[in-house]
Amino acid sequence: MTGDKSLFVDPNLTTATEKFITFGDNNKGKVIGLGKIAISKDKTIDDVLLVQSLGFNLMSVGKLCDLGMMVLFSKIKCIVFMATDNSFVFEGNRKGDLYIVDFSKGPSVRTCLLAKATEGWLWHRRLGHAGMRNLQTLVKKNHLRGIPDVKFDKDRLCAACEAGKLAKKHHSSKTVMTTTRPLEILHMDLFGPQNYASFGGSHYGLVIVDDFS
Image (cartoon, rainbow, N blue to C red; front, side, top):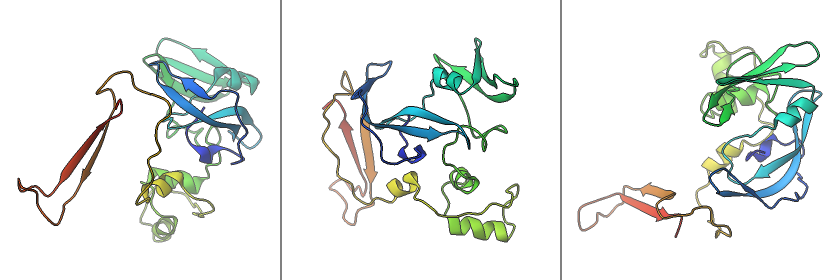
């Protein structure tokens, strides 16, 4: 399951039988749809759930095994090999009850498990979501070291950049309670400076909303 819709091969998702996903802390995530994600040129993972506001991409070990991979677990890490030739694919380090995989390191970044992510878009993310035109200029003038001859084409929209440029967006009402007690999740917004100071002489304001309310 993932929370990033741009990873799917086809943006037109099918309806999933599950309506909500319950996490380990009893919070719920709304299932938006079901689709397919490509992890290499000739391999895809089917039946991937798109879950609203999911901050991590959760990978099924069973799906990896169906793709001909072998997963070995230990107390501190997990290692994934190709079952055919025992070639190394990637590894993850254990953190609590999860095995975390950092795809920004290692030789398998461009060949495995980054769906629909060309080299240009990978460098776009690594360099703080810099504009494609600016990146192309920096590479031509040799202002960046360590970047190969990459073509920066803006063939689609970056979901993170698009969300970051929204000046105003409607906050839809919640249909499912995701918190169990007050002060569990707080939404905070700092704004200012304002043209007119408050009675106390402040030009900034801090808004705090309890998710439980």
